[in-house]
Image (cartoon, rainbow over all chains, first blue to last red):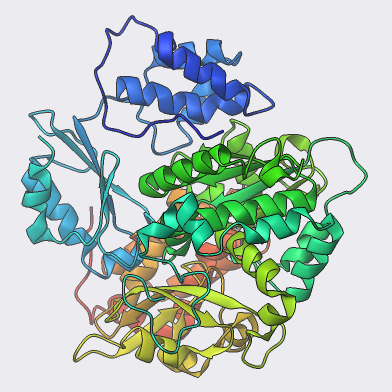
Length: 174
Length: 435
Ligand SMILES: Cc1cc2nc3c(=O)[nH]c(=O)nc-3n(C[C@H](O)[C@H](O)[C@H](O)COP(=O)(O)O)c2cc1C
Ligand code: SF4
Ligand code: FES
């Protein structure tokens, strides 16, 4: 019983009107039901599946998840907005998270943020670059404090980032 | 060992022995290294015998609170027929802590064995392993290892041919520090917002899905196979003088230090040896100023306090702080303490689940007052204001996140007051612009 929640950058986006839970994704969701005593417990995994397919979670998606798990859309929205990793708005093709909590902060994390904003052309934290390529946000401790500054680009975890390495790292994410 | 550095002669390498050894990640590789013997042994023992062995070892929880593990297991009801659950806490979000990540990356089967033994010992057929959402690599390694363990028959309906059922289900978090708190984690697994629950009822009575539940940290569970293989007496003897703290402990060291990494030491090792011998001491030309020994939630120690301490639960308390998660944050003489205390307060303000007024308001106002000081507009009254707020945030809320925000602020004011004074008196350039 391992999970099927795949990690990866946002794949092909189906037309907005297509439901998420069809075909293979539906099968995966149904397999999950066997792992929990309630359908509600599949909510976090189901939201991950939606984000995997769509890149973010819209009101329509929230409605679909609610229906699949016998919950109300308002309830699902309440959960979605509690967790910081679910996107409730479209983000750039690559989503960059930079740790700036104290252990990284004292090792120069704020300079890494500045370098990332400058190199991506994002005007501020949370904004998407004009070419839609990047969104950069600041996050709290990523659990890799011995390797400052860790950043995540989509699902890639990159350690020991310093301002001079930023350009080279970004090249890997066209 | 001080991964990513080679093992230091003063370390006692048990849990971290195979860090960096990719061969240990596979099922066969683990078996070659003596793996799955402990699980086999456990499944042939009675549940009570396992609990007694763990009790006798003196193992205490490595997630932060240091609660005796065997005792916690013994709280699980024995005569109830409803399902029991084990939850393994792999949320590791405490600033300064990055040890569970290495356990999962390098020795996934050690954790699987520990989970399976614990699940059997407490009468649970299923273990939910909750991994924080950002840990994509540990997730992949753990998923592959769990899949292999099923394929090899170590998990499932007939674990290692014992006729006993043990299942492990991986559950991915989605970004929320508070989900590391045990009851918040249970809500999160149930598909809810990660709000901590009021206790009682305690998890052993009504935990996950309302059923008897035990929750343990990754490092705690990973120590269990070693205890079964080598015996409680061996584990208990890993102790430099204080019998209340036994075994080895992984210490994550980060910040202003020559060799950041994870070091494994026998309980009771002098902090001075850890800082200078193992981790290499301060960067050239610098000296240590402050050390936060147990993740960001514990009081800040001065260099003198830290250097006088022995590293175990009681030894750190004696010097005015707590062992916590053993994430050691080292700050040298270049550090602006006011700025870093503000940054920590901001962390707690961001992570508060906002159920309790003292925490929601207290963490936010603490952050703002510290901001005011950093912009050069602080007042003498701000000291008392901060201390009053912190008093209100301590011991009065559903969980201890609120206390955790107060700890660095109160100890910071006590020990580094002159740095606050400098901002308030205008003797120091503001670190922030007024917005
Ligand atoms: C705000 C908060 C955050 C916590 N975060 C973690 C965590 O990330 N990992 C962890 O193992 N324990 C964490 N804990 C402690 C758990 O609530 C719990 O005590 C622990 O998982 C029990 O396991 P142990 O007895 O093996 O230590 C946290 C506690 C609080 C109050
Ligand atoms: S103390 Fe803070 S984090 Fe804990 S339950 Fe109360 S509001 Fe939530
Ligand atoms: S503080 Fe940056 S990873 Fe922990």
